[in-house]
Image (cartoon, rainbow, N blue to C red; front, top):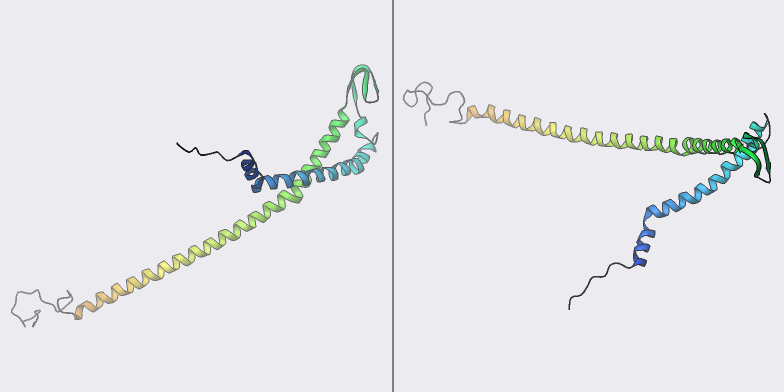
Length: 181
């Protein structure tokens, strides 16, 4: 009898999905976004709408045009005509622009500057490490060159070292340029 491997249960998969960091971060972002929406709506209704209302009505939702006259709206329903409620679109657009500006200037831009500074610090740290490694390599090369030069200059004193005064002539031993060994 062959034992079958069971796939992880639905509950285990759901539990793994929930315990991932991304899901928790997303949930926090949604909650913060909902709270932030209330703030933006309050700013639009309390500050922007009255400023725009200085030119007309205080509520942007009341701005409209009539595509087919006569437009009569009662209790939010068009009784006759075809009204275009461009004031509500303007209000929503202002809410979006204000939200985007606040998110950009108070969250995105400072975070981008912080990440750029952190990347510059990391690059400087890596550059310093590279300079240290290069300088160690240069010191080792200098030591090698000094040892080679020392060994090369010391070879003249060693018989058979290939320096001056070594054999190689055709004369008898002990003759000029010859070795007494």
